[in-house]
Image (cartoon, rainbow, N blue to C red; front, top):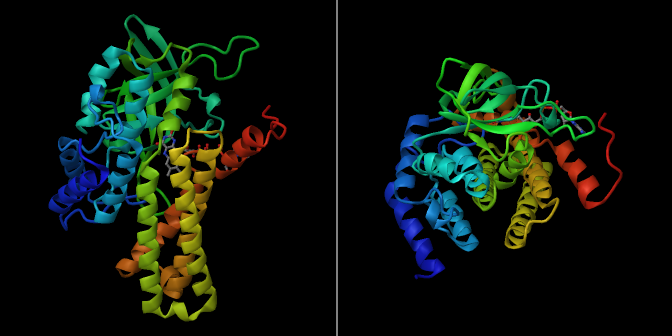
Length: 385
Ligand SMILES: Cc1cc2nc3c(=O)[nH]c(=O)nc-3n(C[C@H](O)[C@H](O)[C@H](O)COP(=O)(O)OP(=O)(O)OC[C@H]3O[C@@H](n4cnc5c(N)ncnc54)[C@H](O)[C@@H]3O)c2cc1C
């Protein structure tokens, strides 16, 4: 067994040989459609080399890598300028959920396709009337012989337009009298490519369409493709959210550092560094990022405790949003001008616009603060009638 530094060398070597100019730096939040076919091909190559499911146990097709190796991988990946991967919903959300809570049959059916990036996934939780209040989902599923029949609508479904499968939170039984509202929900694995499923793109502030409305009109899936017991899907749905980021956060923060470095270079070029307010905000961004990074590394090394994921989400989303706002100050009038600008203007305008979403997806900042208030500080629970 070789040491962590040899492992780092192996990762570096693979990336140096495989990250070509064609894919360098492409994709990411707000840029999910950028060079998609090339990124898909790259992610599949990454998978074939055994780098996509490092954290999964060996018996499920992963490498059972230690946390330090996962961190090393994500650090090196971000440093190399490798493109944003296209497999995160499969490899970091539904895959770990099936490993923890799926049946042996479900694992055998789905894990190989997720690990090889042959089958892509999307997340069917939010609905027009249920986002923060997820227990309010009204998509229904009923058993018809050996299949579930699903009817309802999901919304904001990222990457549904490229997904083969969707994990859908649906109501399969009414709420029993006196029971919690999330009783009776089930977590179903539903094939996307069938006549009962319609995907309609939603145009975002950036002009791009990365998420969609998804309509289920008597869509079907096999009866055994329910994860956990029917009616007990809430626990499974929450487990999936718990798996969402993990060690990848470290790579995300290295990407943030690169964004900040690029913004400083741009501020020198535009002359914005002469403005004391811009200098102060750039300095503050660096300090806040250092604090975020130290905090993340510390909590990753500790057993998960209530509120830590919320604190990290609150910190990074505000950080990225502030950097977008600062980039507009650095660009000045060019950032606000209508019509296409140069590459820098386009990049930062997109960052500025997309980062409005950072404080919404993955649980809005208001919801995260509510979690900290109620579950960490023990403040009185909000009236949710
Ligand atoms: C870029 C992006 C990608 C997404 N991808 C997916 C996806 O792939 N799959 C998926 O299922 N969903 C996805 N979502 C949806 C996302 O999870 C929801 O937008 C989010 O949970 C908020 O729900 P909502 O939009 O219904 O807003 P609401 O829940 O209606 O909230 C509206 C406002 O009220 C505030 N609010 C709501 N409840 C409370 C409360 N109890 N206390 C204080 N304030 C409150 C919220 O913070 C928000 O400001 C995505 C969203 C975005 C922006």
